[in-house]
Image (tube, rainbow, N blue to C red; front, side, top):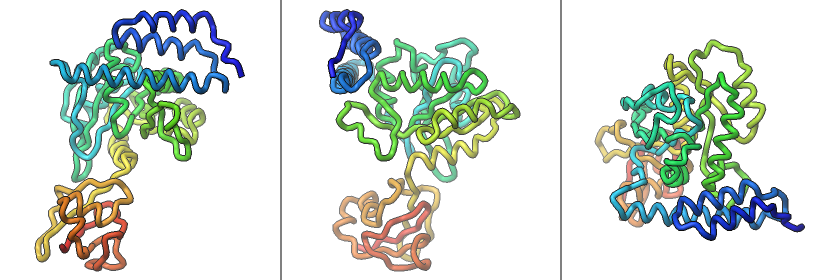
Length: 325
């Protein structure tokens, strides 16, 4: 099938060839993607352009990392969650409501010029939240490429009273421009140059006591692709459920270790991917434990408390284990 590329595409291609900075090159490549006809004849070309955008973005990040500017945010706690979306959706207020950070919260657009970071307590762990500049803010493009492409979970924040479906779709388009798409089981994007990230929608509203039209529209539009949860950052409503959903969507679990004859300390769990085994936990505690592990004693997911299990035993959240080497 012929590509049937337009004059606008070739003009953007000319700008790309004459560009001298990473920002100019990325902007031209994105313009080429935007005006390109979308059909089977351009699938390979689209994938190639996305790979070029990803490569140039990564090279720019490395360049900035070696200069005085550092556009990486070091992951801390049990996981890193990036709050993204359009201007004035309540991302900064949400960060302030869930953490001890007090970012600038303003009624005008683009008040967040660079990421704000806070730690959200959930039961016995801390989860890192990163309030990102608006996805359509060109000045923060390098931040978006660095953080949104590497975070453990993306939370797309929309204002439930202002056409939330349009906001979510615009945010998804902005993410795809930096080669990021929501993870979907059974879909392999490895050959397209796209980076998959777990994602969901936070539908923010001043007061939860409104009709269900907005949240129902989100559920209908993104059914099977993105789930949505309704909260009120201003009134601090439904935030505990939001915390539980964030933890669940990180796809992690907590495992507690103890020494023989000692009491278990539940305040400092080992964080492991969901589905991890005893041998994974042993290696996380100490790299030499995995090879020398003889058995473990477990409280929680065993057939009975204090059961002796082998290295391949699959753990569950909040298991207590005693490693014997």
